[in-house]
Length: 197
Image 1 (cartoon, rainbow, N blue to C red):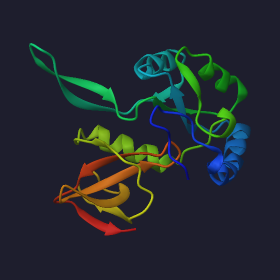
Image 2 (cartoon, one colour; image 1 turned 180 degrees about the horizontal axis):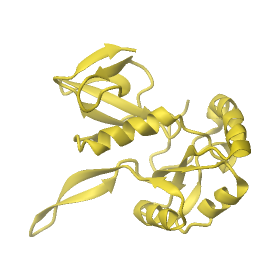
Image 3 (tube, one colour; image 1 turned 90 degrees about the vertical axis):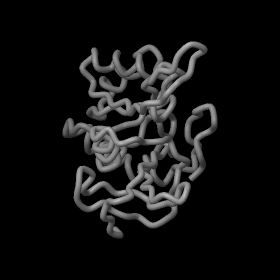
């Protein structure tokens, strides 16, 4: 797979295999009205506005945020910033009508996938992100990792979360990735019990 460009450009056509694997699931979801997660690319610095607008339209939207301390000339302040700049996630039926509602939202560029149609994201990847953020565990954006030892946390607030074990600054860290947008987050798991998957 190729990587997302630095300015948040769309994925290249090298994700063709992923597209065809998931397009069957998307079509099946459209027929049954099943709610499916998709990634949406937004204009730069429009993530929060798009998230609010989608929620107002009744579309389930998930914008992962992380806290960062910013320094101004006279003070320090904690701000909440998008974890994955220019991306958020929507859970919806794969119907033309719902797609149109999303695409007509100011600030939305396209669905992430070949020809802007969107590729379903596995529920587990979104659920892992939501579980980590719900526990208010410090997270950092991390370079996308596709290789490494896959592990699962056992016990505690993060029980069942899966990711790739890596070493960052000599700390044990777990990297949780969203394959489609090739973005990852890292959390410190020192003290958690982990098992290979």
